[in-house]
Amino acid sequence: MSQPLLKALPRIIAIIISLAVSLGGILLLGWDWRQIIVLYWLTNVTVGVTALIDISRSDTSTSKYNMFGNISPALLRTLFCVFFTAHYGMFTLVHGVFVFLIVSGNFFTPAEHAPIEYGPIFVSWLLMLLAMVIARWSTPQTRLPIDTAMMGPYRRILALQLSIIFGVWVIVIFHLPSGAAILLALLNTFFELRYTRPSPQ
Image 1 (spheres, rainbow, N blue to C red):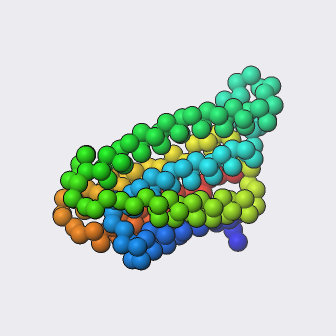
Image 2: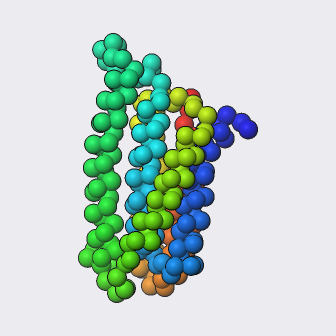
Protein backbone atom coordinates (compact mmCIF):
# COMPACT_ATOMS: atom_id res chain seq x y z
CA MET A 1 0.00 0.00 0.00
CA SER A 2 1.41 3.42 -0.95
CA GLN A 3 2.47 5.77 1.84
CA PRO A 4 -0.06 8.56 0.98
CA LEU A 5 -2.90 6.03 0.89
CA LEU A 6 -1.73 4.53 4.19
CA LYS A 7 -1.81 7.97 5.82
CA ALA A 8 -5.27 8.65 4.40
CA LEU A 9 -6.69 5.27 5.48
CA PRO A 10 -8.11 6.38 8.88
CA ARG A 11 -9.91 9.30 7.23
CA ILE A 12 -11.31 7.08 4.48
CA ILE A 13 -12.50 4.57 7.08
CA ALA A 14 -14.16 7.38 9.06
CA ILE A 15 -15.98 8.70 5.98
CA ILE A 16 -17.25 5.23 5.04
CA ILE A 17 -18.42 4.52 8.60
CA SER A 18 -20.13 7.90 8.80
CA LEU A 19 -22.03 7.27 5.56
CA ALA A 20 -23.00 3.73 6.61
CA VAL A 21 -24.30 4.88 10.02
CA SER A 22 -26.19 7.78 8.45
CA LEU A 23 -27.90 5.61 5.85
CA GLY A 24 -28.67 2.99 8.48
CA GLY A 25 -30.34 5.59 10.69
CA ILE A 26 -32.34 6.97 7.77
CA LEU A 27 -33.47 3.65 6.30
CA LEU A 28 -33.87 1.57 9.48
CA LEU A 29 -34.69 4.11 12.21
CA GLY A 30 -36.60 6.69 10.21
CA TRP A 31 -34.18 9.57 10.80
CA ASP A 32 -34.71 12.79 8.89
CA TRP A 33 -32.16 15.48 8.07
CA ARG A 34 -32.27 16.91 11.62
CA GLN A 35 -30.87 13.74 13.16
CA ILE A 36 -28.21 13.66 10.47
CA ILE A 37 -26.89 17.14 11.16
CA VAL A 38 -26.81 16.40 14.92
CA LEU A 39 -24.79 13.26 14.14
CA TYR A 40 -22.42 15.27 11.97
CA TRP A 41 -22.00 17.86 14.71
CA LEU A 42 -21.00 15.05 17.07
CA THR A 43 -18.49 14.01 14.41
CA ASN A 44 -16.68 17.26 15.22
CA VAL A 45 -15.85 15.72 18.58
CA THR A 46 -14.53 12.58 16.87
CA VAL A 47 -12.25 14.69 14.70
CA GLY A 48 -10.99 16.49 17.79
CA VAL A 49 -10.25 13.26 19.67
CA THR A 50 -8.28 11.79 16.77
CA ALA A 51 -6.39 15.08 16.41
CA LEU A 52 -5.31 14.80 20.05
CA ILE A 53 -4.02 11.30 19.27
CA ASP A 54 -1.99 12.70 16.37
CA ILE A 55 -0.66 15.59 18.47
CA SER A 56 0.34 13.27 21.31
CA ARG A 57 2.64 11.27 19.02
CA SER A 58 3.73 14.06 16.65
CA ASP A 59 7.17 15.28 15.61
CA THR A 60 8.01 18.53 17.43
CA SER A 61 11.39 19.20 15.84
CA THR A 62 10.12 21.47 13.06
CA SER A 63 7.46 23.41 14.98
CA LYS A 64 7.55 27.14 14.30
CA TYR A 65 5.79 27.69 17.64
CA ASN A 66 8.72 26.43 19.70
CA MET A 67 10.17 29.92 19.64
CA PHE A 68 12.54 29.33 22.54
CA GLY A 69 13.91 26.15 21.02
CA ASN A 70 14.46 24.45 24.37
CA ILE A 71 10.98 23.18 25.26
CA SER A 72 10.96 19.42 25.69
CA PRO A 73 8.92 17.44 23.13
CA ALA A 74 6.60 16.09 25.86
CA LEU A 75 5.89 19.57 27.24
CA LEU A 76 5.34 21.04 23.78
CA ARG A 77 2.87 18.26 22.91
CA THR A 78 1.05 18.89 26.20
CA LEU A 79 0.82 22.62 25.50
CA PHE A 80 -0.47 21.95 22.00
CA CYS A 81 -3.09 19.52 23.33
CA VAL A 82 -4.31 22.06 25.89
CA PHE A 83 -4.47 24.89 23.35
CA PHE A 84 -6.16 22.72 20.74
CA THR A 85 -8.75 21.45 23.23
CA ALA A 86 -9.67 25.01 24.28
CA HIS A 87 -9.71 26.51 20.77
CA TYR A 88 -11.32 23.60 18.96
CA GLY A 89 -13.76 23.07 21.84
CA MET A 90 -14.99 26.66 21.57
CA PHE A 91 -15.29 26.28 17.82
CA THR A 92 -17.33 23.10 18.24
CA LEU A 93 -19.56 24.73 20.88
CA VAL A 94 -20.44 27.65 18.60
CA HIS A 95 -21.10 25.24 15.75
CA GLY A 96 -23.33 23.19 18.07
CA VAL A 97 -25.42 26.22 19.04
CA PHE A 98 -26.01 26.89 15.35
CA VAL A 99 -26.95 23.24 14.70
CA PHE A 100 -29.41 22.98 17.60
CA LEU A 101 -31.08 26.27 16.66
CA ILE A 102 -31.70 24.74 13.22
CA VAL A 103 -33.07 21.41 14.43
CA SER A 104 -35.30 23.11 17.02
CA GLY A 105 -36.90 25.26 14.34
CA ASN A 106 -35.76 28.51 15.96
CA PHE A 107 -33.43 29.48 13.15
CA PHE A 108 -33.68 29.06 9.39
CA THR A 109 -36.25 26.24 9.45
CA PRO A 110 -39.79 25.88 10.82
CA ALA A 111 -40.41 23.52 13.76
CA GLU A 112 -42.74 21.21 11.87
CA HIS A 113 -41.40 17.77 12.75
CA ALA A 114 -41.80 15.39 15.67
CA PRO A 115 -39.36 15.79 18.58
CA ILE A 116 -35.94 14.25 18.08
CA GLU A 117 -34.91 11.15 20.02
CA TYR A 118 -31.26 11.78 20.80
CA GLY A 119 -30.47 8.36 22.32
CA PRO A 120 -30.01 6.44 19.04
CA ILE A 121 -27.98 9.30 17.60
CA PHE A 122 -25.64 9.34 20.59
CA VAL A 123 -25.18 5.56 20.55
CA SER A 124 -24.45 5.64 16.81
CA TRP A 125 -21.89 8.38 17.34
CA LEU A 126 -20.18 6.44 20.14
CA LEU A 127 -19.79 3.45 17.80
CA MET A 128 -18.34 5.73 15.13
CA LEU A 129 -15.96 7.29 17.67
CA LEU A 130 -14.78 3.87 18.85
CA ALA A 131 -14.20 2.66 15.29
CA MET A 132 -12.26 5.79 14.38
CA VAL A 133 -10.04 5.69 17.47
CA ILE A 134 -9.24 2.02 16.84
CA ALA A 135 -8.46 2.80 13.20
CA ARG A 136 -6.18 5.67 14.23
CA TRP A 137 -4.24 3.67 16.80
CA SER A 138 -3.93 0.61 14.56
CA THR A 139 -2.53 2.63 11.64
CA PRO A 140 1.29 2.69 11.64
CA GLN A 141 2.50 5.82 13.39
CA THR A 142 3.51 8.49 10.89
CA ARG A 143 4.67 11.13 13.40
CA LEU A 144 3.12 14.12 11.69
CA PRO A 145 4.73 17.51 12.28
CA ILE A 146 2.98 18.86 15.35
CA ASP A 147 1.80 22.01 13.55
CA THR A 148 0.16 19.85 10.85
CA ALA A 149 -1.43 17.56 13.43
CA MET A 150 -3.07 20.52 15.15
CA MET A 151 -4.26 22.38 12.04
CA GLY A 152 -5.41 19.35 10.01
CA PRO A 153 -8.85 18.91 11.65
CA TYR A 154 -10.05 22.36 10.63
CA ARG A 155 -10.00 21.31 7.00
CA ARG A 156 -12.40 18.46 7.73
CA ILE A 157 -14.66 20.75 9.74
CA LEU A 158 -14.97 22.90 6.63
CA ALA A 159 -16.39 19.86 4.84
CA LEU A 160 -18.89 19.23 7.64
CA GLN A 161 -20.07 22.82 7.69
CA LEU A 162 -20.41 23.05 3.93
CA SER A 163 -22.50 19.88 3.80
CA ILE A 164 -24.78 21.08 6.62
CA ILE A 165 -25.30 24.62 5.32
CA PHE A 166 -25.71 23.69 1.66
CA GLY A 167 -27.72 20.55 2.35
CA VAL A 168 -30.21 22.17 4.73
CA TRP A 169 -30.58 25.13 2.37
CA VAL A 170 -31.46 22.79 -0.52
CA ILE A 171 -33.92 20.78 1.61
CA VAL A 172 -35.73 23.87 2.95
CA ILE A 173 -35.77 25.96 -0.22
CA PHE A 174 -37.08 23.13 -2.38
CA HIS A 175 -39.42 21.74 0.33
CA LEU A 176 -37.91 18.29 0.06
CA PRO A 177 -39.35 15.49 2.22
CA SER A 178 -37.66 13.95 5.23
CA GLY A 179 -36.14 11.35 2.94
CA ALA A 180 -33.88 14.11 1.69
CA ALA A 181 -31.68 13.18 4.64
CA ILE A 182 -30.06 10.80 2.17
CA LEU A 183 -29.13 13.84 0.08
CA LEU A 184 -27.51 15.43 3.13
CA ALA A 185 -25.55 12.24 3.91
CA LEU A 186 -24.29 12.02 0.32
CA LEU A 187 -23.39 15.71 0.28
CA ASN A 188 -21.38 15.28 3.45
CA THR A 189 -19.53 12.32 1.94
CA PHE A 190 -18.77 14.34 -1.20
CA PHE A 191 -17.43 17.34 0.69
CA GLU A 192 -15.37 15.18 3.03
CA LEU A 193 -13.75 13.31 0.14
CA ARG A 194 -13.18 16.61 -1.67
CA TYR A 195 -11.61 18.52 1.20
CA THR A 196 -9.94 15.76 3.22
CA ARG A 197 -6.39 15.16 2.07
CA PRO A 198 -3.57 13.05 3.43
CA SER A 199 -1.32 15.15 5.62
CA PRO A 200 2.33 15.36 4.58
CA GLN A 201 5.04 13.63 6.52
